[in-house]
Length: 236
Ligand SMILES: [Mg+2]
Ligand SMILES: [Zn+2]
Image (cartoon, rainbow, N blue to C red; front, side):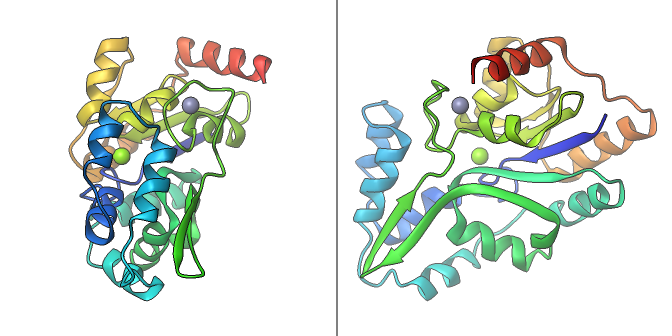
């Protein structure tokens, strides 16, 4: 049995939703975001149209410089360090973009200690093109990248899945997680679906709870999550 920690990025590791900040800084956020919230367009479509709206001053170096103006939860360093010291793999699962995740995790000094699964945004011939390597047809979630599939692909049968998130893009993955940390709309959807979870405000709180559970060897697998994983494996 191995404990594996999965972390959402926007609003979980980062203070703000940097994807939204990126789009409102370099492109047109509205009315696209409204269409997304009303489910008139998918997340992938939202990202394609948003990237197409980026202005000419959105050069790669400008975008990297913008990324570094954003703030991370100061608990990320200690959390990743504790996981490394205790042999707990950490995977960042994001429906956002590598262009800001990479520089920020590098600056936080944790880039070499985590695996990162996110969407890509590349600059080509003067335009920004998003791509979605974890797009899934086997899951009915609304996201561009399906976090459920990343979780399933990275764990062994008897692993314990710890998931930390805050939003809509995490709702499909937490159904497959044994220990859930939720805030924001994710906490609301966990309550609605009856998924037991710790509510948290900061990654420092997450670390304190993980340390306590680790000391007490208290990482039980959640029956509903084990069944959901089994069903997903069988239907793949
Ligand atoms: Mg988030
Ligand atoms: Zn999904």
